[in-house]
Amino acid sequence: MADTKYTQEHEWLRVEGDVGTIGITQYAQEQLGDVVFVDVPQAGRKVAKGEACAVVESVKAASDIYAPVSGEVVEANAALADSPGDVNAEPMGKGWFFKIKLSDKGELAGLMDEAAYTDFVKSLG
Amino acid sequence: MGDSLRRTPLYDLHRELGARLVPFAGYEMPVQYPTGILAEHAQTRTAAGLFDVSHMGQVRLTAKPGQNAAEAIETLVPGDITGLQPGQQRYTQLTNDAGGILDDLMITSTGDHLLMVFNAACKDSDLAHVQKHLAATCEIEPMFSRGLLALQGPQASQVLARLAPQVAAMKFMTGAFFVIDGARCYITRSGYTGGDGFEISTPATDAIARKLLAQPEVKPIGLGARDSLRLEAGLCLYGHDIDTATTPIEAGLLWSIGKERRIQGGFPGAAVIQKQIAEGAPRRRVGLLPEGKAIAREGAEIAIGGKTVGKVTSGGFAPTLGRAVAMGYVERAHSANGTKVDLLVRGKPVPAEIVPMPFVKNAYHRG
Image 1 (cartoon, one colour):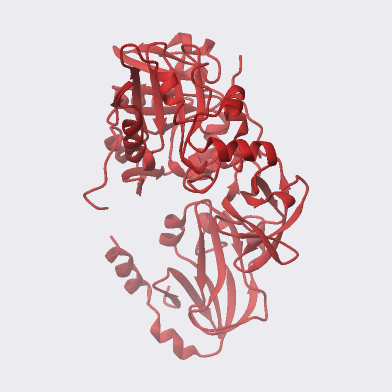
Image 2 (cartoon, chains in turn yellow, red; image 1 turned 120 degrees about the vertical axis):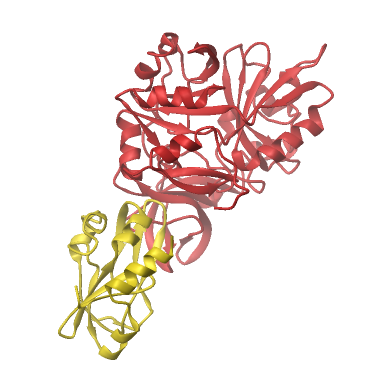
């Protein structure tokens, strides 16, 4: 998908208008294993690019999720509270984490597109 | 993966099964198989799971002529070992002069000798410790290349009985020799899951593992589920819940110290441990049930009214309960069941209650 961007921390960001939906990639969910809890940010929170703003807990460990871009959180995926396994089952679908209203669309230029991210994951071995 | 990592006899099998291998205690060990930790955990609670625990340190202790191996090892552990009948097994600890725990271990008497199983990360130092103190009285034979399998779960007995029918009659914490496909194995009815199960010490690790995995009730289980299973059972993980700075009394392991030995002492740190038995330990290991879904992991502070009273030593998601659980140490004055505390998770206080352990009822086969 042309409008989906990726970070080196294995988040994805799908932008529609000036709102971006954020989640973790298939590679990330495989590395984490079974997700049992996701702590998502509240709507209204202002986040800076690179700021830790969500936590995903697998059986093994807790991992921070970083905002790929700056902006204001406009919605969190409330369904994850009861079905955290959605992150494993559909990491790029119903397993999304939260949505941000972008404050600077220029930041998108610093993110990877799908081809670059695929190469990046391959380089990790 | 560094070249220096050791491999168990099941390394090739783990690869074939698609395990995710990670460095653990100097070994390349399976943390999970493709089905994942939650499925492996449920498998072990409802059917049977096979664990490779060959990285653990098996050591045989045999008395030299005119000596007594049980009396000898009792100078290093507080457990009642001289009271073990042939075929009986006990859980105990190697203690230091401060009453701290160097390692926790199982000791089984075969009648002829004692079999000890050390934690993988401690086995080299444990062996040196035992050699230093017992070389004059005992033959000490490390069997570090011998395999150790754990078959755990409610269907473990019916499965293993197909290979060795007499195991079905064994009781929890007993052991016996069996020949399986020509291989002389020592099997104990014990484990680290809180459920029924067996540990199989064998020179034919790969063959027996494959035979067990061919049974319809059995699936391979990695270290990830081993940890969540033992946490639900309230069992200590060495290096986390117990270490050289914790005593068996602080850890709630008084039950593992022989009644006569509590009085007579004669093990390292006996004075400290006896004083704690008489007066109470300054802190206690407790079970913790956090409210909500947040998971308090090792290192999280335990506080009451903003004042730190302890620290979490193990915490995670308990799949059987579908919620988070933890254990940790708190000052004795605050250690009563029902005490309300806060667990600091990423700086945020999560309300929790001190509760008895295990979190999931034991299902040992006491016969």
